[in-house]
Length: 381
Image 1 (tube, rainbow, N blue to C red):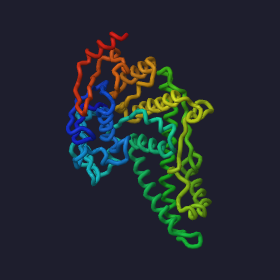
Image 2: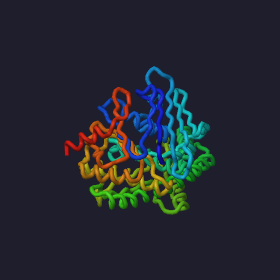
Image 3: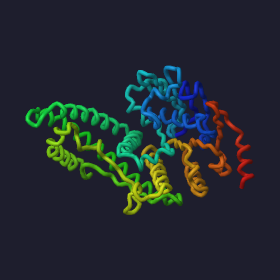
Image 4: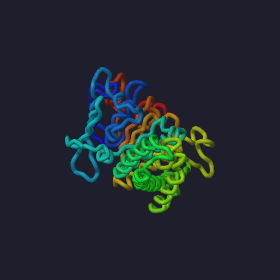
C-alpha cells in the first residue's frame, strides 16, 4: 500500500498543503513546533478518522476556520488504479468518501487504508491505564477486520442500555425478562470481541518472536491477555459470562454498572516472569513497545496481503545507531515510511536510495536536495 499524495485544507497550522510522497522513505525535518507531527497526524486521521493526539475532532480545524479537509491518493497492491480518500470534519461531525462516493458507516471505511504509528507517547500503552490498551486493541483489530467494529459498537450500545437500566431498578423491583434479554445480547457480542482480541494477541506474540529473530536488540516480549473469563471456545465463554452476570447481579444493581465484560479487559507486557511496567528500564519499555509495533506490521501483511503505511514520529533520537540502522533496513525493504525528526543525523540516509527529505518551518513544507544532507553526514563519519 502506497500513499502517493496528501492534500490538506485548514488542518492544524496548515491552510493549504499538497505533498507528493516517496514510495519508500519520507523524512520531515525541522525544529519542534513547526508542524511536522501535524502531517503524520493528518495521514492517521485519513485512515482511522480519529486523531491519536486529541479526542476532540474540532482541535484539528485550523484556527478561525469552520472545517478541515484531508485528501489522499492511495495505491493498493492488488489494484491497477489509484483511489482517492477524503475526510471532511466540521463542528457537526465528519464525512468520509472513497473515489468521491460517500461512505455512510465509518466502520466500513476504516479498514480500507491501514497505518501503524510509533511515537514517544506510545509508552502509555505500557505505562497507562487498561483503557489505553483496550483502545489500542480496538483501533488495530478494527483496521484488520471491520466486522470487529460492528460487534464492538453493538456491545457498547447494549452496555449503555444495560447500565441505564441498572440505575433505575432495585433488587426488589425489576423486569427479569427484559434484563435477561439485554444481558444475553451483551453476551453474544462480548463473546465475539473476546475471540477477536485473543486471536490478535496470540498473533502478536508469534510475530514478536519472528521480528526479534530478524532485528537484533529488540526485547523478548510476551503479551498476556487479562479477561473476566477464560478464553476457550465460544460456547464456554458464553456460559461463563452468563453465570458471571447471574452471580454479580446484586452487586451490579448496587453500584449501577456492569462489572464483567470486555470493557474491563487488559493486557500486560512481560519479559520472562517480570511485568515490564514494574521491572523494566525506560529503554526496555520503549523497545518492548517498538517490538509490539513491528509485530503488528507483520500481522497486517499476513491478513491484508500488503504492508501498511508506517508513521514514525521522532522515535529515533533515543535509539543507538546500531538499532536505528537495523530497524530502518528491515522496514525500508518492506513498506512506505513517513518519519519526523529534528536532526537528520538520527537517520543515516546514506543507507537508502529511495528517500525524500522535506524541510518544515512555520507551517511551510519544502522538498530538499538530499545530496546536501548526504554530504553533511559523510563529513561527520
